[in-house]
Image 1 (spheres, rainbow, N blue to C red):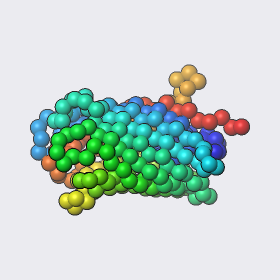
Image 2 (image 1 turned 90 degrees about the horizontal axis):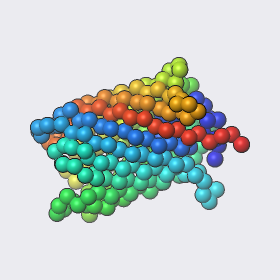
Image 3 (image 1 turned 180 degrees about the vertical axis):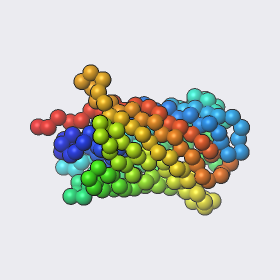
Image 4 (image 1 turned 30 degrees about the horizontal axis):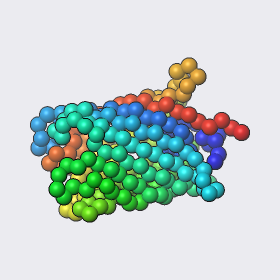
Length: 232
C-alpha cells in the first residue's frame, strides 16, 4: 500500500474517506431540534479507520460506534457499523467496494437488530479538490435503507479545508421516500500537538426533509488523530 502521506497533502487525505490513512476520530453531535419532537439531543461517536493489505489487495476497515447521551430516544448505545472497503488506486483518484454490517439495539417488534449490504464509493482528486460520492446500503427482514454521501472538499493553505462533511442523503425504500436531505459545511484544520498530527473540525448541518423524529438542526465537532504511514 502506498504511504498515506506520499499521495499529497495530509489535509487533503484526511478529507478523503477512501484514503489509506490510519485515523481515530472522536466526535460529538448536538441536535438542537427535531421535526415533530420537542427537545434536543446529544450523541458521541468513535470512528477508527485502519488501512491494511490482504491477498495482495488494499483494504480500509472502518468502524463507527454511536452512543446517545440524551435525546428523545433516551441514553444508551445507538448502533455499531463496520465496513471493509477494498480500495483500488487510479490515476484520477480511488474507488472502492466492500461489505457493510450494522448492529443496533432491540427497539421493539419489527425492528431489525442486524443489517448488512454493500458499500461503494469513489473520490477523484483534482488539484486541491476532492470530488466523489460514497454509498451505503443496509438490508434486513424489515429494513431497506440507502445513504448517499457527496464528497466535496477543498484544501486551503495552512492545513485548513472546507468540505461537505458527513452529510448523507437517506432513502427508506420500505416507504419509499427520502428521510434525510442534509445541507452543511465542515470546516477543518490539520495541525500538530507535539509530533502528533491531528485534525479538528466543526460541521453545522440543516436537514431540509421534514420527517417526524428526524434531526432538524445539528452541529458536529471533534478531532481526529492521524497516523500516516512513513515512506519506506
